[in-house]
Length: 203
Image (cartoon, rainbow, N blue to C red; front, side):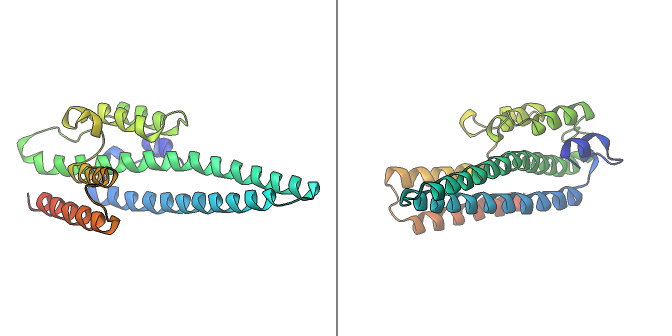
C-alpha cells in the first residue's frame, strides 16, 4: 500500500496517529530508505566496473553484452532512485507530523490547534509524494507551506532544524578551509548537534 492510500483510506489516517505510532512508521521508512540507498550505491560501483571492463575490451560481441548490462543496471538505478525520492518525502512527512504532534500534545492544555492537519491537507501531500516530478527539495517547501512552518525557517534553510543548519555550517567551514581535517569537522558537528538536541529535550 502506498503512503497516498495510507493517508486517505486507512481506518486510522496518518494525521490521527499518536507520537509513538508515527515514530514506528518513521523508523520503518528510514530502514527502507537506507536499503534503497545502499542498493543504488552498489549499482553505481557495478556500472563503474562494467564501464572500465568495456573500455579495455577489444571483442565487439563482448562489448555489446557489457553495454546491455550497463543499460539494465542504469534502468534499475533510475527505478530505485524514484522509489528513494518517494521514501524521502514520506519520511519527511511522518517526521514533521510527529514533531507537530509533540507540540500539539504540549499545547493541548491551552486549547491550541497547533499540530492538527486536515484530511484535505493530507490528500494534497499524498499527491505530491506520489509525483516523480516533485523532488525532495521542492517537497520540503510544499510541506512547510501546508503545515504552516515556512515562516519559521530561513529561506535558505527550508526544512532544516537548527541542528541541521549547524551541520551545514561545519561543511561550509570544510569548503572554505576554516577546518582542514574532516575528522575534526565531524567531531565538532557531532558535539554541537548533541548539545542542541539535549537543550531541546530539556525544554
